[in-house]
Figure (tube, rainbow, N blue to C red):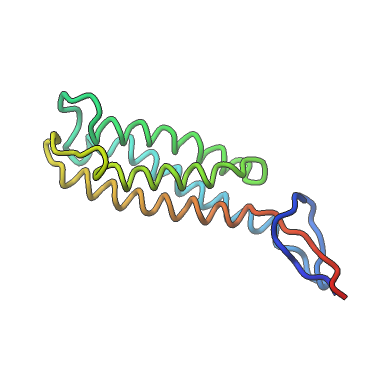
Length: 150
């Protein structure tokens, strides 16, 4: 009898207990999650202008934080969507970017914004979703291994 246990590098398509292992399906789901993160990254780049709190003079504001974080998320998520098995680092990086984005209004302070409420809400919502997607991608790309227990 074989039991599937996480944490071993194996990209092959295997049969476990007479059923196909779920690794290819898990990677497809991870690619979809990464695609969602990619779209959120694009939103971060344009959201300061769409929500009306674009550049206001201060060097590090919600605008610059969102644009920089958005570009990082776009690049990382695109890599994770294209090759989830080979870019296992994309999930943790996306989760970290989401956590940073959610914490930035408290750590950086957006008081200089034209509308700091919109920037704060946007960062909290998008950051929370990005962190969740990053965790989901990380869990989906964890490799499976089989152990004979009997």
